[in-house]
Image (cartoon, rainbow, N blue to C red; front, side, top):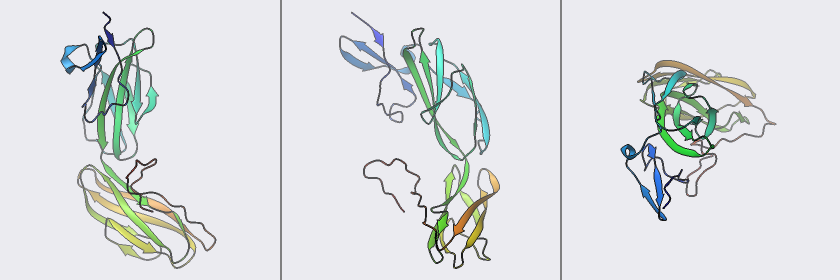
Length: 219
């Protein structure tokens, strides 16, 4: 008989948690407990994670000759260990793949890391006078305790999501001053161009690009 470790494509890392191990034995695919075989894995410094933050990932794998690190499916390093700076608040999928001497993937470990903070989201950064523009906060980890908006045209507001209209053409600097329950006070800015000759640039919300069948896209 032949026993072979194999990477399993199209898996659901949330359902399978963090460990992916499989064995082909007489044509039958079996999923095994993480402790049944040598493993791919990593640890990281679990300190306060407010963007921007640099995390050190320590490779604890007991298999593999070479390795590759991925952040949201993008290859970021082939080093044994990883130091990576997360500049924006978001939830990131961090993966470590282990390879044998022939370059075959023999192990994979996933973890999902939330970098806390708030992003200012303007659903369009260009508009015509009189257009309704939607502004909102994209919150990761914790919650927004206070939000103060200055739209650069003499008007202000206090809400997490709101609609604003510019009556006069011009370039406006939008400032959001927030107090986040984990990361504290922060100031975010965006620039809005209002012109009669402007073709509005729309952004999907949530920021789903691409989207899955059945997803709601707001424009």
